Image (cartoon, rainbow, N blue to C red; front, side, top):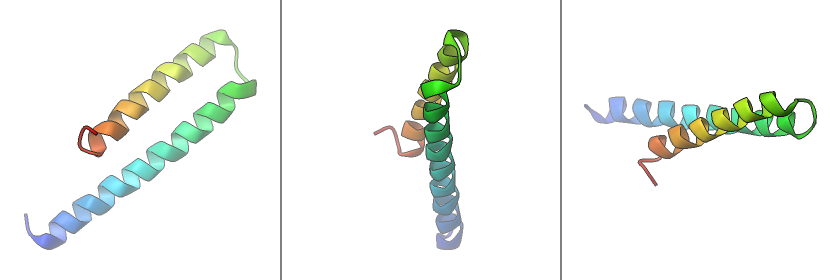
Length: 61
């Protein structure tokens, strides 16, 4: 992989992390007032999954 490809990969990872952060923020706001307990459980599972994906994108930190 050359430097240009590596830079593009890093840009894609950073873009994915930004999208994950936005989705997490939306889900957290949504669970604060507009969903019932079943929906909240699903959202919390999704948030946990997103956190794991984000951690993997950061290299397992």
